[in-house]
Length: 151
Image (cartoon, rainbow, N blue to C red; front, side, top):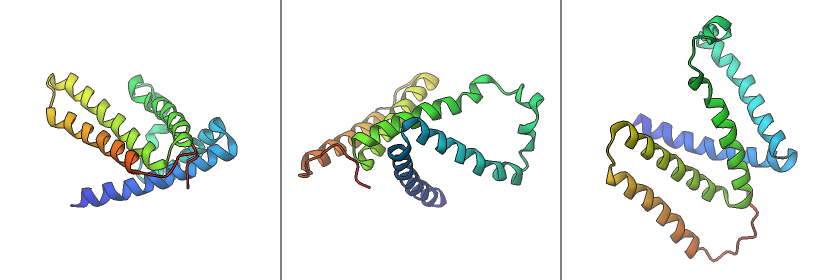
């Protein structure tokens, strides 16, 4: 039950984060909005890092022992953020969030299938249900889309 509450809270924070990032993109441009997002994340993460005793990350010899693949998460996050900002500018925030979710579920399905060497049909069905839900919602929505994202 605790995980469900945390997941819902995380989803709400994620949407608020996307709305703020979209405003930064519109005000500052895609590159500058993304840069501000990452600079703020770095500044905010420093107290968390020290509070939880992760100061060994400041030791260069320790960082040399971390596999390069583990350090690539920031690059993928940056690329993802830029794509999300571009997509949110062209669609509603709710749709862009669902599209990102479908992409995450699809990537998770692919990785799980490679690792376990089996495909779970219910996972594919779940992804298809989400896509069908978006298509039905878009078809039933009678508001013409002008390409701008309402905030």
